Image (tube, rainbow, N blue to C red):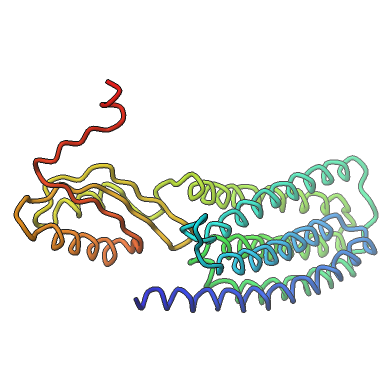
Length: 301
C-alpha cells in the first residue's frame, strides 16, 4: 500500500524536475544554435544539436508521464505505463541519428576546415556547461528510478561532456589557430554518445520484449519460491516489467494437498516476492500434488 503511494510521489517529482530542466535547456538551445552559426563552430553546433535532443527527450518524457497517468480500461488492462518505455526507445533512436549526422559533418569539415571565432565559441560553451550541470542536478534522482527520465538524463550528461569538449577546443584554437580541432571534438562527442545510447536502447527493448528485468535473477526467485513451506514445485515462471520499477510475475505452484494450505502458501509466496524482490504484481496458480497438467501441445499429440 505504501509502495504505491511513494511511487506516485516519485512520478510527480520527475514531472516537476523535467519541466524545470526543459525550460533551461530549450532557452539556451536557441542561443547556442545562433551562436554556432555566428562563430562557425561545428563542435558548438554539435553541442546545440544535443541540446535540441535534450529538449525533445524531456518534452517526450513529459508527454509519456501524462499518458501513463491514464487509468486502465477494458482494452488496456495494464494501463498506459509502457508508453514511457516507447518514449525512451524513441529518444535513443533520435540520439543515434544526431550522433551519425555530427560524425558525417565532422568528416566533411576535416576535408576543408572552416574559420572559427574561438572567443564567442568559448563564452557560449561555458554558459552551456552551466545549464547542463543544473539540468543534470534536477534529473539525477529520477534517472535511477525511471528509464524515461534516465534517457533524458543521459542526453544531458552527454551534452555536458560535449560542452567540456567545446571549451577545450575553443581554448586550443585560441592558442594555436588549429581549426581542425573543432571537427575532431565534434566527432569525439558523437563517438562518446553512441555506446551510452546503445545501453538505453537495449534496456528499453528488454522491457518491450518482456525480458527479465535488470537486477532480477530468475533462478534466485525460483529458488526462494521453492523454499516456502508447502511449495513442492514451481513451473511456468515468467517475470517481466510493465515499465520502470513495475515488475510483474506469473507462475504455477504445486502445493501440499492438505485442506486450507493453498491460501496460506499463496499469501507467503506473494509476501516473499514483494519484500525480497520488489515484484509488485503477482499472479499465481496453485495446484495440488496430484494435479495433471495437459498443455495444448499434449492435446495435439
